[in-house]
Length: 319
Image (tube, rainbow, N blue to C red):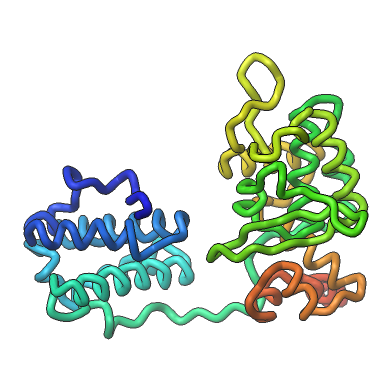
């Protein structure tokens, strides 16, 4: 059984759940422990459920069994004032799934969120900021690789750019996930949903990974994490995997140091790599396979080639 979010334990259940009895409490905990495998989804759903039930308590709802569609609709309406449409839709999905679980567990008679509609939202292009190829090259070239932290940071950024890896999959890699096959270096990624995905390395990524593994001495630790924190006071790699928040802070810090004004995130490098690949004649179908997307519709959200066309057209406005 997977762990429940730290915010929920039998001693810290929401009041509306506790008031419904022990059976409701157990079923509520089981939802987060058993029904949701992705840790990011679990945290997001836990936040949504906690916020919703706290709001219901303030609205005078005595128990989770007394929640009605009107309560869900009113809460969703409030969410649209402070959150983007995709976030609101995710929060509504969390409430729907939670109550579906409670219905099948015979804790509540019906799902009060089933009939509530979320905000309309349709996106043809993702909101992830993308770097120009020259900016990505400038960022990689600016990193001082005379230290273990520099070798690590360059290898991590390059991995996300040249293999389209999600940051979560990159940070979950072990040293043995970098391996030689057919005289080329390959990387093994474990993507969302437990899907294993292998990619041959671009020659630049291959050079950076070799430099990182050889320069830090971790090549002989196959079961150890590939990307690690720096041990305090030593400047050397520790045995602790690098957290995602640290990777985000590193990327922002590195970009700011070379004057890149784009507010980048970890997904920026994935989107940058996909866009660069497509600009150089790659196909959407192959990009989807390389990114391990189930559908090319998802890949299209990372395709920002039309941004250049839009900028060129805007410059035609002369007054």
